[in-house]
Length: 204
Image 1 (cartoon, helix red, strand yellow):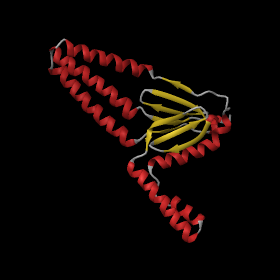
Image 2: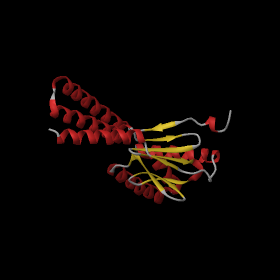
Image 3: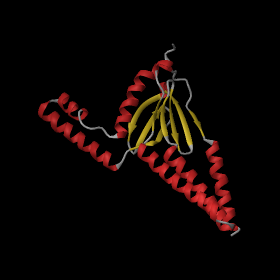
Image 4: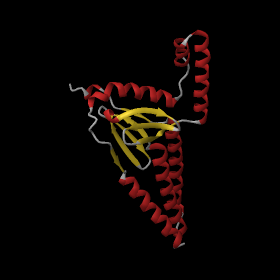
């Protein structure tokens, strides 16, 4: 067994966003079916094209985004862009407004791992608590106080990916290139739906 085969492929998606997207798509599918069954004429075409366009946008914004930890690279799937970063090319991982993947050339942002205002406020409180505990009992006690508390979703992902970075960095070379690509099937589908929607509005 090769060294890369020892590492599993792990996919991170925000479940709240996925569930929201699925619910919206189900409602859109019901409306589209009702439009096809009852509607007719230009108005029905416009509504149908609008529902298809809206459904595609909802899908790429809520369900498609993901962070995929593969054996040789970290893949960031954003709504309309995919970034594949070899583990050896990653300088650091951090949380600001979302998960940031830092390389020597650029910083890539992961749409799937967002940091909410509540999480940022909680992080500031944890830092203050750690400082208070460390002042009373020493730095190691302050670190334990932070680690023993509940970790937000984004922080859990950062901790796991940081561990993977340490383990998997040796599976690739720093000379491996970062690959940035567009998900052309989704881009083409959205463009075609937008054109159909505009045409349907013009011929009403």
